[in-house]
Image (cartoon, rainbow, N blue to C red; front, side, top):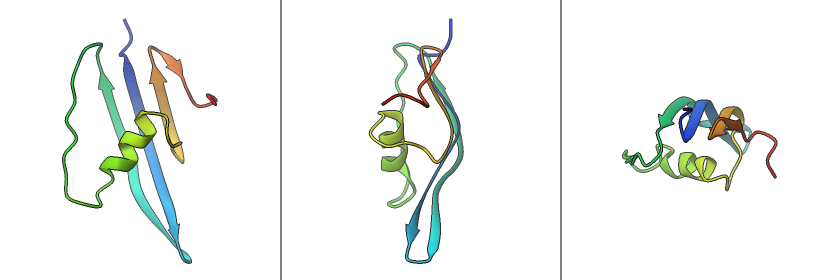
Length: 76
């Protein structure tokens, strides 16, 4: 049985003027069905960016997101 949610090498960055700020780099995780996860860290470390990607509100710049074994890279 595949994990309910799998993220592989997720990356996300934003432009700040002429500078690119990398928020997430190489984040990977797997969650089994009915498994809980707590994401903690200091302000500005990328928690909300990761949650937005995992909940399909935002798209990662790189990496793969799979739900029940199906890749969501082309999901609208």
